[in-house]
Length: 203
Image (cartoon, rainbow, N blue to C red; front, side):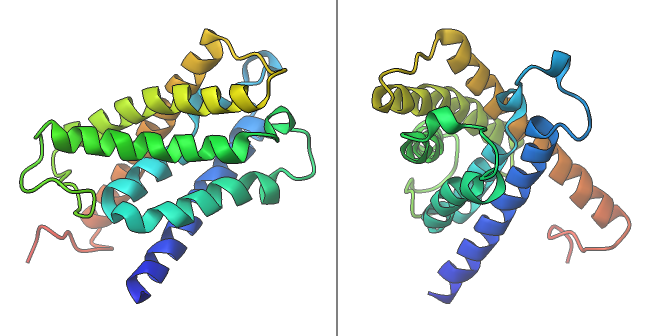
């Protein structure tokens, strides 16, 4: 129980940090990086990196906190603007599809026997080789774009979601997750090189 609580707090804080960062950069556009002031929020969706990393390394313990963050993020961060208002009737259910996409992707990687040992969602995935992590990112991004938009469009019958929108979400999830992983790799590599932290590979 203690482990579950610690994992939940870690997952929630990490997801909310990435959501706040993404919101400031993509929606508020504090860095003025949005092209022609067009909405490009999903073109690099950083929180998908939290979904992938948390499910891969904390397994099923991370799922409740991930969903809580998915739901509370928009409610707490962008409650005073009209961003995502057209998704109100289904975005909290669509979030289930986004998390399920990562779970399915992890299971597919396991079933493909690219990891060693007995395959079970209740065991951690061996991602010492980054190609497996990238594979999960690609598969989960494809599934997330389809599942999330399908759920939202089914609930909101007046909302039309075309192929371009689905592709934009797929690309956004993939680029967002890759960006997060590269950033974390740079931070931790620098910290190890400067001896701020000790590499787990060293005695």
